[in-house]
Amino acid sequence: MEQRGTRIALGVWVGLVLLFLYVPIVVICLYAFNKSNVQSWPISGWTTHWFGSAIHNGDMQQALWLSLKAAALATVAAIALGSAAAFGVHRFRFFGREAVSFLLVLPIALPGIITGMALNSYFTFWKLNFGLLTIVIGHATFCVVVVYNNVLARLRRVPGSLAEASMDLGADGWQTFRFVTLPSISTALVSGGLLAFALSFDEVIVTTFTAGAQNTLPIWIFGQIRLGQQLPQVNVVVFLILAVTIIPVALAQRLTSESGILRTE
Image (cartoon, rainbow, N blue to C red; front, side, top):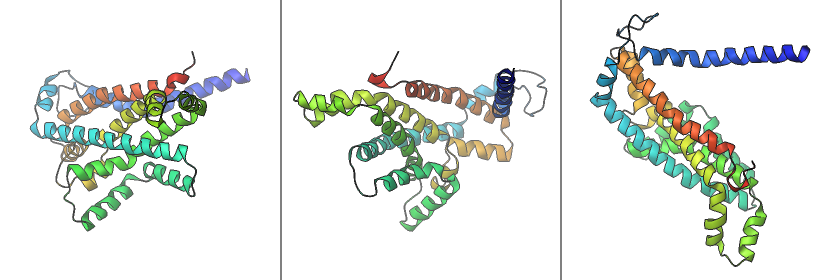
């Protein structure tokens, strides 16, 4: 009886936490179909009118395009740097190895405002023009962590005997990497890249300090909410972003739950 009561209590608690997290998101999604431009509850009427005006908003399109470019470039940089760092930390033993691993993971634990202010000061000191490049650098600082953690965790699960067997059969280092190591970590790379893209796409704090006068989509949304003049369009954009963001996150979760060639049925 005690175990049953505990399970019920935990189930109720989990349900309350999920409601706390997702009810506001559901409400915003419902407001995207609100006929009135005033957010009030209950919703008096339903329409898809705001979808057309939001999609054809020129400022929103420019902000969306900049966000997509920044997220894509930051993801490529994160995959290259994060996987290289994971290989180095996993394969080699050197003084300060744990410190290097700690420093690689640290950026995702730091508040975004600290990272943003530090990068802003750095770019200003070196007189770099704020734009796409500075946004990509800022986003790559925390996207690298996701790829690094995924690849390092997968490498630790791959038996070293596989690479040794490949070398014993006459394969050189590149062939061993291409035909043995890369296939075994491919899902970790893809899932890390998908998560990095999702993190970069909706990041607002670091972007605020590194974008200069340019607007990414999160900054555009924040500006419209602050002014309060186009809330229906903002609700539509948020709805579409949520719908699209679910795809890479779900794929990353599915891929992370698998283990490449080590998958067990």
